[in-house]
Length: 165
Image 1 (cartoon, one colour):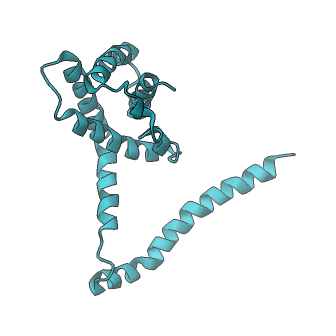
Image 2 (cartoon, helix red, strand yellow):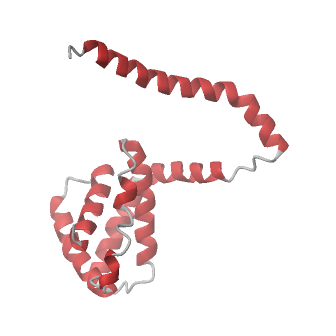
C-alpha cells in the first residue's frame, strides 16, 4: 500500500466510523489536500516506510465498532497535534484541519472513554483507600464480566446447536 493510499485509507476509516461517509466528494478533495500536505512534510523520503505503519496496524487489533471509535478518536487527535505547527495560511492545511476538527467533535464521547481508560491506569493501587473501595466493588465487577462473557458464550452455543455440520 503506498503512503498516499494509506493516508486515504486511515481517513476513510475515521470517516466511516464517525458516521461521515455521506460526502464522498469531500474525501476526494481531501486526497488532493493530503497530497499537498505530503509535499510539505517531504513524506516521499525513503525512511517513511521504515518500521511499518503507525496507525493501521493498531487499528487491526480493534474489532468492534465502538472499540474502533475509541482508538480513532485518539488518532484524529494525533493528526491534529501534527498539524498544530504547520502553515495555516495554506488552504489544504486548513481544509484537512477543519475536517479533522469536525471528525473529532463527532468522536467526542469516544475521546471521553479514552480519558476514562487513561485515568483508570493511573489509579494508585497501592493506596489503601483505593484497595478497600476496589475490593468492595469486586463482586459487582465480576458479575458484569460474567454477563458479558456468558452472553457471548451463549451466542456461540446457540450457533453450534443450530449448525448441522
